[in-house]
Image 1 (spheres, helix red, strand yellow):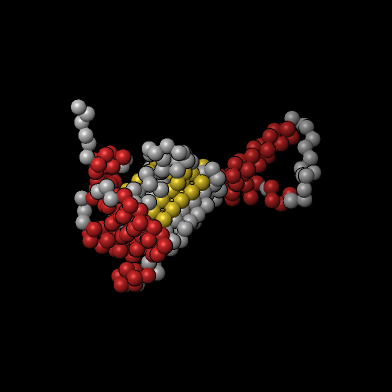
Image 2: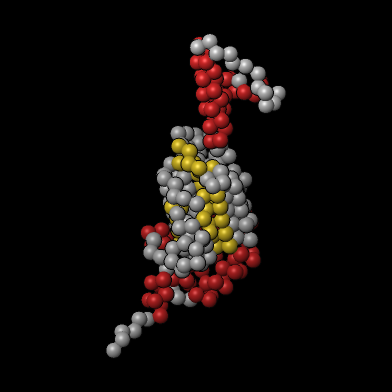
Length: 270
């Protein structure tokens, strides 16, 4: 005789296991809401009072409703969870699937246009700006959305696609498109996003150690061009030592002043 499995257990099995989900579910909704409100003051200087945050911040509203919907989703009440998610999007213009797992002290600044898919996993102290998408890239029903570890900051308009993982304290530059895993303590920039080694420390004026300087992003293309310019100068110097004539004027354009060594060094420093 075939062994039957309760419907709720089957639905629970479909939900991807995550330590983010487990840690959040062990905490009461009131405690999570209190943390979600408190973290706003750490990351948004415009916040003035708890009442203002609770009544006027769509990101806080979306997170609260998603936490309720996620508990319904985990309990097997899929349609009520989706209906509540639809209402949250209608109210806040933020679309978070009730199946997404979200850690503690999650903050969505402004929030308009944010989309978070069903199997997305978000750690603690993560910050998203408006227009961010945590999307999938496959029709498979398994894990197909990104995992963001603790302390990740995603700039406005960035797209993070696929079942990839962003390590702790990763920063994603505005409008970047991330399609590959990113190690911890890195900044990614561009389309597709390129990894740049992070050397700067967290902002000194933030006592909570959260680096929100997502606008301070390096220019890897500019650095590569600067390296090529310096290399050309070295090669021309070697040719002059061998007595070869080197025309110092550029025949391509009249922007000789933009190709100087000082400009190259400045680009490398930036």
